[in-house]
Image 1 (cartoon, rainbow, N blue to C red):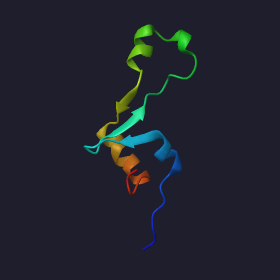
Image 2: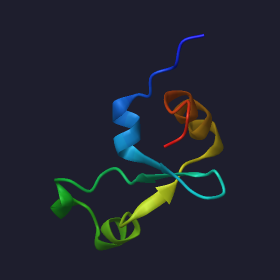
Image 3: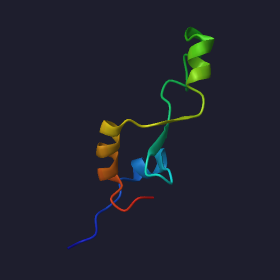
Image 4: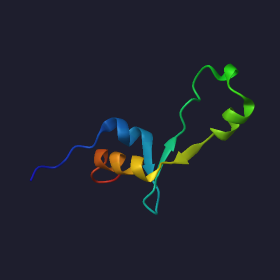
Amino acid sequence: MPKLKTKSGAKKRFKITATGKLKAGVAGKRHRLISHSAKYIRQNRGTKVMSESDKKTIRTYLPYGL
């Protein structure tokens, strides 16, 4: 059986925590920030843990973890 390739875009964008959850950066932080409220910008700072349904899809892109 051949080895599976990791999606190179996924390995740059996601990290796996010690408990197996997936962390990712939050969308909407790059430009057009003046039209967003301060609360929106503040709450989207840092990273978020991905939902279980997204996690299933992303784990197929990372067959051997990171």
